[in-house]
Image (cartoon, rainbow, N blue to C red):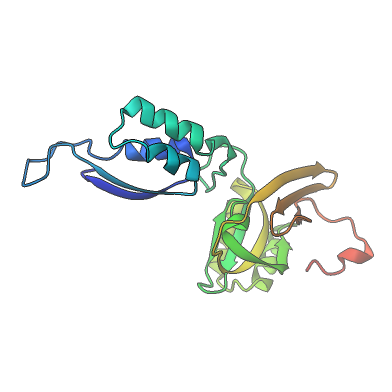
Length: 214
């Protein structure tokens, strides 16, 4: 793709270097004040250490620049990667945003991104009819869409359905993700909810606490 500038947010050192490396890779015809392969990068970051280190230089060799970025920005190992195409272990959920009223399937990182209504977190379990009823109860009225979501659940396990108000004004940190096997239980602890969001994938063993799921 032909572009000479990019505006991006630096989340970790690896993606930051990779994105900067995409700028100015294709030659352009020289025009007034514009040189071949010249690129401009506007980088937003939440790292005063990076800013202080780079501010010491008017110009800086690539090797030193990459070394500073690597030592002052977060490691990519701490980032969460989401989406249906993610090849690693991903715990999928159906998100219904009240503003858009359109369900999407996404990874557990939605708990960082959206303001989840804890009173409306529903486990997705049971046979096709039970799952269809759950999706209808959560406000999805389109039968074709319900069948599509159930098919996705067959291919990529969906733990539950959550309703959210909107995107957060700031990112919420996920503290831990735990799985218990009997029954199969997923607990997602976040900074704003350290007690954790709890979801079950196995069918419930009935107790008086489970007369109503939510």
